[in-house]
Image 1 (cartoon, rainbow, N blue to C red):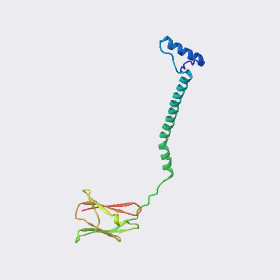
Image 2 (cartoon, helix red, strand yellow):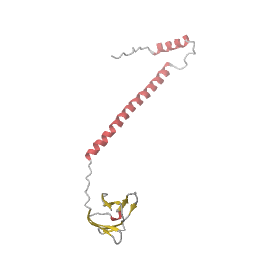
Image 3 (cartoon, one colour):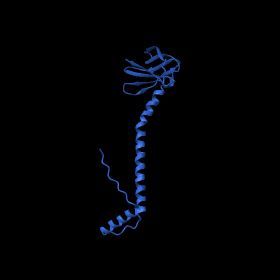
Image 4 (cartoon, rainbow, N blue to C red):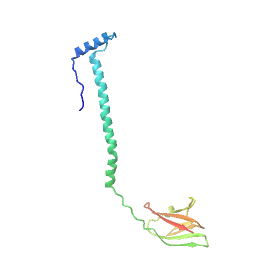
Length: 161
């Protein structure tokens, strides 16, 4: 299927004489370097190229196998998400103070992190947030209320008027 070139072999003395004859036939100055030095330089150059080629092949294989390592690591470690037990037990509008009041129940409520977003994207913070009571100044429109817990979970409530 593939043709290989014939490999000829000469001893070093005959090869050096053939090289000098080629220089003489081409009317060039004879070679001042010995054939041994030329052969050594050729071997050193091809060794560097071969080593570089095999190192690049090995690195390519490692790069192609890298996603497999992350895939296998992902199968072994699963994170169990804890459901938040925060619930809104009661809510009402306090017309006198123009605020919305929520009564919350649950453990690990992070009261300092409670906030709401208006439709225009602006953030509003509660007037009061402690001991299960959260009050937001609210007149009309829609707001998204975010109630975080200390574990990193967030309960979202939407209020429209």
